[in-house]
Image 1 (cartoon, rainbow over the protein chains, first blue to last red):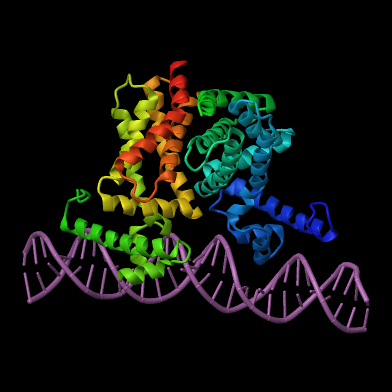
Image 2 (image 1 turned 180 degrees about the horizontal axis):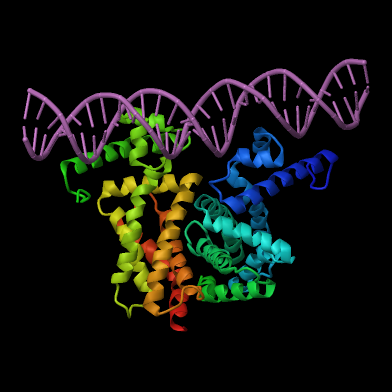
Length: 208
Length: 208
DNA sequence: CTCTCGATGGCACCCAGTGTCAAGCAGTGC
DNA sequence: GCACTGCTTGACACTGGGTGCCATCGAGAG
């Protein structure tokens, strides 16, 4: 198996190349905007060929959106790990918090994340991709919720909608994320967002 | 002004061309799938030039998503027209119902709409566009809600999230739309979806 | 030393989308 | 009938994203 994350030398070299590409891309995109940067620009500053770029990233959008993918699985596994008797609003709050805490752990890492989030939210093409990802997370969360509360997701709208409400909360937090906000501030925003959807989250799970 | 919907002869001719293009596109897309159809295919069956296609539609996706645009404004104006003392869950339910009733008025029109909805929901690229549209509607609804309840949308997450919950309900309805469902059935699905989010919708508006 | 395997670069190609220009074809005034 | 105007159309060239294919290079394995 040469597919382990800390595996062979070749594997580490691959990751190094990917990171180089990603850094060049994010730097250019954040300063010039999405449409004003071509893939040729990116590979030029990274010192590689156009073809290589597309071996590492499926599309220009993919560079930006990629690191969101793993966050999604984190969210779902976190929900699965929460105690079964926890009300949905609390369990989902913890699940959604997972990627947020990951963003905000180190101050410089946080600022970089915030810039990427801004880029995504302000660029229609990226925003669309982000929403697509969200849909996948939502399905994962919905399946987990349905299992938790023993509901049939094909007839009961609750699981999908509850998962969607959690995503709305996440969106609200990201939207309100201001420069310099520390982890405590993010937690506060998260609490406020979940306070809005909690009534439906918890009422919907009980009366079924 | 030559921009009225039933205006000049030239205007009607334009609409005729657009409809021809749209019909050809929808027929091909629905049968072969989105990626398997090129713009050249579409213009070939419609008997026009490639360039003409892009004069009527901004992109291949646009053909499918276009007719959703007007629905958005309908939703917002409907919400604005609802009595001010109506609870948010009721007002929003009526707003969201607007495009749904439009889809389901004539049986054949309904079936055509349903197929397009399926196409959108099953094609990632189209789904992303659809979500982008939704974001715009959501902003419109949020602004209207903020005005209704005298809230500050820049600090209070309620308006955006309430609008988002209405969209979740719409999504849930479309997702569950089965072949042959009549208007009554759609109304039932809508009621069930709104029953899930109503607690948060109405609680959030009061306690502020 | 050679053989293999993975990574790379270069090239041709497809397709979406845009700018530009030369028609075609109303309607309008002379 | 004729010229002028405005709108629509088609043709062509061009940019840019994305893919398939093949030649090459370097790192081990035998």
